[in-house]
Length: 625
Image (cartoon, rainbow, N blue to C red; front, side, top):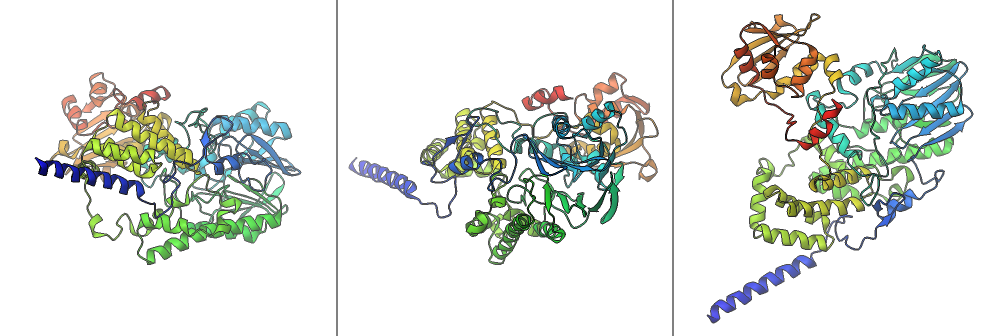
C-alpha cells in the first residue's frame, strides 16, 4: 500500500514537474503569436481589435509620408489634369486628361467600383472618356458600367487597351489564373477568404483594410486595342509607350504605360506594402527576380509622376527613386537571404524565421515595405518550393502519415484527448497562441466536437488581432467564425453560368477530373455530346481516366452513343444543380444514338463535387446562380 502511494506521489510530482517545465519553456524564435498574453490591443474606428503597430498606421493622416496606400474613397490631384481615385477596396484607378478627352486606367473589381470611379471622374472633369487602359486582369471588371454611362452621353467610341492575351485570360479564368484552370473555383473561394468576404464590418473581428467589396463582377469590356511591347501610340492626343514584357509581378499579362512628354508612368509594379511574393490564397509563382527587373524598368524611365495600382501617387522624382529603390531592396533581400538559407541547409519552416529575423532595420522601417498586406514570413517557403517542390531533404518527410492518423497519434502521445485539451487551453491562457492552435487543430481533426472547435477558434481570433498583415487576419478571423458556425466558407465556388456557356469546351474538358476510378473500373467507352451550332465534343473513359476531344476525328474509339443538350444544361451538370439522370429522364438531354440506360450509367462514373443539399456554404451562394 505504501509502495502504491509512493508511486502515485512520484507520478503526481512528475506531472507537476512537466507542467512547470511547459510553463517555463521559452520561445527561441520570436513570433507575435507566442508569449503574447500581455500584448495590448486597441480599437480602431469600427471596433476592430488591433495591435499598437496597426493602430498607429491606421491613425496616420492621408498625406503622411508614412502612409503608402489609400484605405478609403478619395480623389487626389497629382498634377493639373492627373487624378488618382483611391477606393475602399485595394485598388487605385487613375485619370489623365488629354487634348481630346480622358484616358482612364483600370476600372475596379466590380460594377460598384466602376460606378464609384465614374462618379468621382465626373466631379473633376466633364470631358468624354476616350480610352480605358487595363494594367492587368485583376481590376478590369468595372468597365461595363463606365462604358454604359458614357453611352448615355453619346460617347460610344472608346478605345479599350490591354495586353494581347488579356481577353483570353479574363474569359477563361475571370482574372484568377490558376496553374490548372480546373481548380479556379477553389482559387476563387480562397480569394474570398483572403479578402475579408467573411469578416464582419463592425466589432472586434471587423475588416478595415484590403477588402474586396462585393458586387457584380461581370463587367469586363473586352480589349479592342491590344498593344505590344514598346508599342508607341497617340491616344486622345497624347503620345504613349506601352511595355508588356519584363514587367511581371503577380500577373504576366500586364501593361505598363508611359507618357514620355509628361514623364508619367502607370504601373502594377509598386504596391503600397511589402511586395507580396507569395499570396497565400494561391496562384502562379511570383518570381522576385522578375519583379526586381520590373522596378528597374521604371527606375530607368525616371518618372516625374508615378501612378500605381496599389500605392499612393507620387509626384516628386527624388521621392519616386528613393521609394523604388527601397522596394527593390526589399525584394532582393527576401530572395537573396532565402537562397543563402537554402545553401545553409534550412528547410521552408526554418527559412521563415531565418529571413524574417535578419530583415535590416532600415528596410523594416521603410514606409513602402510595411507588412500590413502580406507577411514576409510566408514568402521564403514559396521560393523554396518553386526550386525544389515540397520535399525538404529530410528523409523522414518523404512519406508522412495522413493528417488524421498523425492527429490521432499525437493526441495519444500527449495522454489522450482530455490531456491534450488541457495542454492546449493552458498554452492559450499563457498567450502561446501558435502552439495552442497547433494542438487544438489536432483535437479538431480527431474529434470535431464544438468545445475543440471553439478552442481553435479562440486561438485563431487572438492571432488575427495580433497580426499586422490583413491577409493573415482575414484567414484567421474567417476560419474562427466558420468554426463557430457564424459563417460557412465554401471549399470551391461553382462556375459562373455565363463563363460555362461562353467557354463551353473548356468546361466540358474540366469535367473529366471528376471521374471515379473505382466506378469506372475497366470501362473503355466513348460518347459524343452535341451542344448545337457545330459544338460537338467527345468524352472518353478508359483505365479509370477520362479524356475530352474538341474534334471527334481525334478520338481513338468511335463514340458508342450520342447525346444532345443545350449549353445551359451543361451548366446544371457542371455545377451539380441537376443530375444527368434527371436531365436524361426528363428529356432535357436527348440520347440520339444509344440507350438512356447506357447514358445514365456512363455519367454515373463521375462524382459530384457540389453538395447543394448538405453544404451550408453552397446553400448561401445558390441564389447567385
